[in-house]
Length: 172
Ligand code: GTP
Image (cartoon, rainbow, N blue to C red):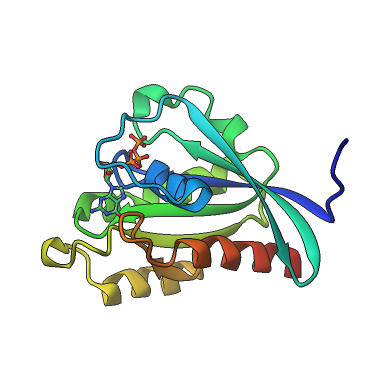
């Protein structure tokens, strides 16, 4: 039987290759973490049910490929998406610099009212940090979006990231 939901909504996870997008998804959906993962080809999907403010929600999560050569059908990624995580790796400065590129793509292809969160992943790698929390916060502030540091490896702020985005979308 079809279950009934108050809301069904889609969020997309974007960002450079290897920043940990699939890691975040696997931690959230299965509470698992893999040390070695293959690059995502095209897109992977996940779904999760949750309750927020007594609303029954089905979240559809699209984990997209960071590598250019696997990103052929980009505009369909964003179709109908209510939320997006732009993920960079706090131990990889280039992935942070490329946040602008991802913002540009969202502005071009997603709906105007899409809710975005900037995510600095791999915060367990403090000794290899190349992007300070302050720098990332400033960037997020400039863009007018929230910033959150996560670790798919040690499970920091993963549930919070998804809950935050759901709350914002439901509130709207
Ligand atoms: P593409 O599919 O190519 O776009 O990459 P991705 O962003 O999905 O990266 P993926 O999740 O495949 O992770 C890349 C590598 O980083 C893997 O070796 C993961 O184990 C590792 N990784 C992911 N998240 C974390 C994290 O929070 N901390 C640490 N230390 N490693 C992580």
